[in-house]
Length: 336
Image (spheres, rainbow, N blue to C red):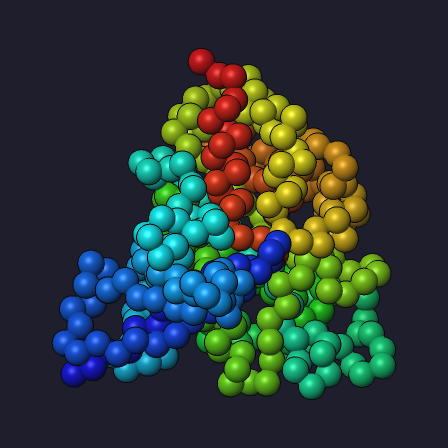
């Protein structure tokens, strides 16, 4: 029996990479990652190679059952140069978390868009729906748009074995969010990219598409982010407010380095309004959703044992780059 293996990779477009995929058919496939062969593709078509030397390699790094296909699998891959070294577009290979000490929970916001109108679901042609306020976690056809897609996507992720944590409609009309959690930065990134793939592919059947732009609707509408909740052994076990403050302070001198990998067009979202801190500032605070980094109240109530939430990453950010930068900064903190 032949199995369909969908190899997924990130292309070389900058600063926002796109997902690409193609199908490989294998006889009597075991379903195991170690039996997924390295494959190649034309890198000159994805801005990852020149035409006179265009072969790039796809190295399988994670595998999931594909709930939408018989004998199907989703294979997340890293892009390698033809000599087997990591391609410059391969941010996953540069993550410094080989022991999976860092845990990440990503909150992916997005808009569901109608292909014909090019507007979010619920937006009338030539106008606007009612102001935001009644859409967040709403129920009923007047204010809730796209639930059928969201529910189907959640089921697909669960059936694929992704550690899917939740869904909710967000503050703006046609805006939704899902949450994922994983122990290990690379695993968290793998699961987020595959969850995005399942969502994007699903919309093909409905005449919709997903808009990951952090501020697709200008004016008094919330933008979309991908808040990054993170911890390591230090944050989970230290029991020290001073240690938490030292970790937060480590982010201050490298704020621009973080913004550089947190997603394109993020300056349109991080204005200091709509539950954001200004892109030009850095701040942190307990339960403060207007800060760059929020210290969750649960962390405080548990005696300063828990996690932090970086609220700056944009919805179109690469979880590999975001996690890699956070890990680098946390490890640089001056704590004993």
